[in-house]
Image (tube, rainbow, N blue to C red):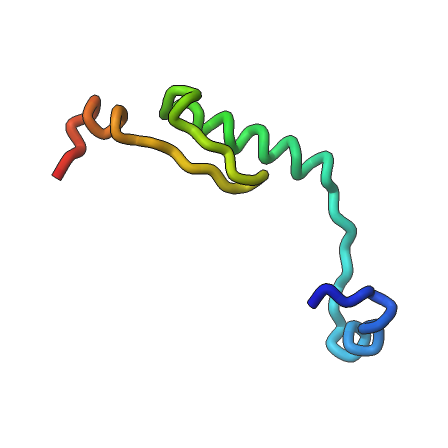
Length: 70
């Protein structure tokens, strides 16, 4: 893990591993859409974006509104 590609080239070839490059522009767009969908369920103050693919939502208002309590 976290080794440069040239240092593990023999392992890659031995196991026929496919190496692909990342597409950060696409990843950023998908992240934006992901957080946008989640934002539809809460007020902006109830969504804390943690990273490009993680966030915390306070769903207490949503739960009360839809009578989803136990």
